[in-house]
Image (cartoon, rainbow, N blue to C red; front, side):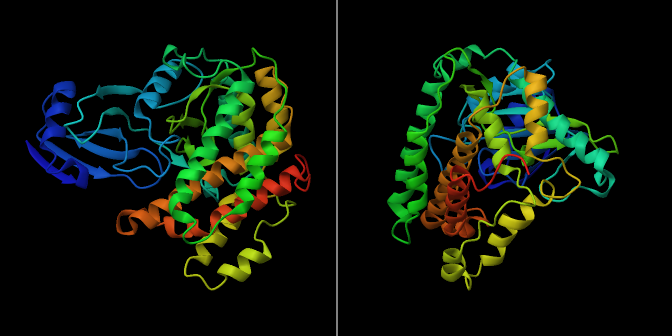
Length: 379
């Protein structure tokens, strides 16, 4: 067997190749590469002769210990949506032996498609294709919330109120963990203010209104097919799946869905403090360019998503400001964890992490705007 390893954590690839041989049979040629993108579980591409597989494994260190990188949860979630209306990669193998690559891992199929992060590919750049992308996105989320909650998640909260309380508690704990290092550089008071306001506005929800939730359902975790059909072929990154409040999934998606009429979140404070920072242009791209698809005048807005979700799910989306602001708090806390990872181990941190010095400020501002009614659901 000829093994070519381009991923530091697998060493010379011998142990991984031996494990995969037990699952897929022998191969004459094996190539292992790291796939870029994402901030949670690591992704490896394995070329096994003419076949290609994806390996998901926890990172060697995680910037959000309680929120990301749960391989067992992701494996259970993918198993739950297999053979349902929710498109996702098929599971192929699981290995609990941490000696192989330093942690447990699983193998799934490699999907053929493209993730739309900011601008749509030219083949999708029409009002009809844009609407299909949004409808496919919304329909899959509604279908997910009809999937029975896997037995592996029985320990998760059994009411929306308990789920939301746990979420806010986790966010506060994660923020405190990140600030053990980040407050040596600066403090983002706006995230604490946002958490306080959300705790005061916890919505009343029916006790039986829980569902199977993705926890990270957003545009860059969705893969669309090649060709002109704009078909959704895969929902990715399931490590935060849970039994929880489905409206939190909707609000998280909507918090990413900026519209042309939304006020800017690039505050004067951020511009004055960081205008000459080496990564300020990257911040501008994060704020302005990431939403290039959602804010385009030919793309359906947040109201379209809500209307279609309510129709498909048979569930009313209420307490919009709370759920969207909860999404911005969640992302703000996660990015503060990324900034800690940069401070703790800059040489090995992801290249985007230095910009996280600034990102939590604009997210705190976004949450404030939403709760203050400055960013209406509909244009």
